[in-house]
Length: 307
Image (cartoon, rainbow, N blue to C red; front, side, top):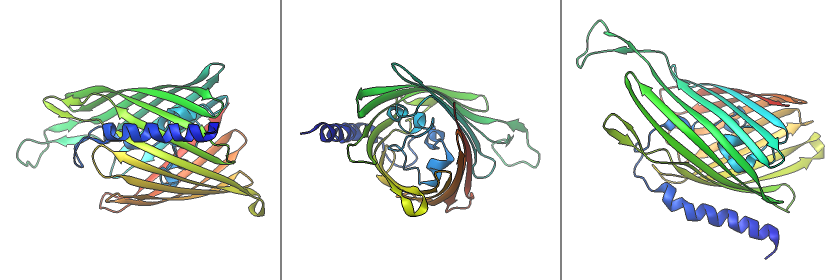
C-alpha cells in the first residue's frame, strides 16, 4: 500500500472507529450548548458547512484543528451572525504558523436581547429583565505527522448563563487532514465536542458531540480564469441521525466567488447561498441560509485577513 493510500485509510478508519463513541447519546433535544454547532466563516456557511477538508483561513480552528497546518503565516477570521429573532453570534479565530506547528486561538459569544421576567402565572406587568448568554474559548494546535498528513486538537472551555443559573464545561475536538497525491483532492475526519456533561442547577445535559468525515476536490478552469471547488461532509451527531452536507464554490480571477450548498437530514435547514470578494490579503464573505420555520432566515458576514 503506497503512502497516500495508507494516509487516506488511516483518516477514515479513525473516523469510523470514533463514530460509535461520539454518536451515542439519544434523541433530538438531548444535547445542550448548541451554539457550538454554529460554524465559523460565511464562506463555509454558504457552502452548506461542508468544510472540514477545506483549509484556507483561520476558521480551520473551528472546523478541523488539523486543517490549520496548511494555513500559512498569521490568519484572522471575524464573523457576525444575525440569527433568528434577536439571537446574535460573534466569533473570532486566529491561527499562527511556527517552525514546530500551527497555533490557534478563538472566541465564540452567543447572546440575545434581555428577556422579560415573569412569575409562574402570566401577568400584565413584567417583574423585570434577565439576560441569557454563552461563551466558548478555543485553544488549538496542529502539525504535519507526515508530509501529507496533519493532526490537530482544540480545547474549548465553555460557560453558559441564564439569569442567575450557570453551567460550565470543557470540550475537545480532534482531527486529521490529508492532502492526497491526487491533485486537488483532500480528505479529513473530525471528532468534536467530546467532554463530560454540563449541568444547569440539577439538570444535566450532554455536549453536542459529533463525528465528521469529508472530502474536497479543486479544479482550475481556464475558461473562467479561475476554478471550481466541490466538497462534502457526512456528520454523525449524538442526538440524531446521520446528515450530509454538500457545497460548491466557483471563482473568477481568484478574487470573486459564488457559492451554494445544501444540508440534508435537517428538519428546517436546507439550501445555502453566498458570495465573496478577496483582494490580496483581505477578504469579505456573505452567506444566506434558508430556515424553513417561523423563526426566520439567517445572515452571516465574515472578514478574513492574512498577515
